[in-house]
Amino acid sequence: MSSYATWQDIQARVNHDLSEDEQALCTTLLGDAGVIIDTFNVNASTDAKLVVSCRMVIRAIGDDTDIPMGATQGSMSALGYSQSWTMSGGASVGELYLSKLDKELFGYGNRVGSYSPVEELVVGRSI
Image (cartoon, rainbow, N blue to C red; front, side, top):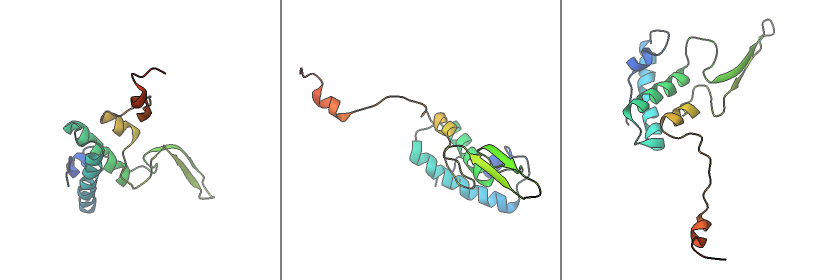
């Protein structure tokens, strides 16, 4: 497994000191993130791989706030003990995934276009 970041890189990006259990979890998740990244784009720059690895793990472990990372909307109630969150497309709590921004860091963005293999059959022929 390729790991492009360390738990110290995660610690530098979160608002609290990581416990030994969190350090071990981050190390494991960073290895998993490396596999996902290599599957998506093994030729990405080292800097992009480091940033994306950290972002993926921080989303999975969360931070010190009560708001899930990736949430675009949320609501809380008081005495009824109600809480709901709307997650951005493809986001989930506790899972490693590549966000839209992560994919853009790897050079994949909003590319509009189409391809039809049938076009190759008729190029150069007059109808």
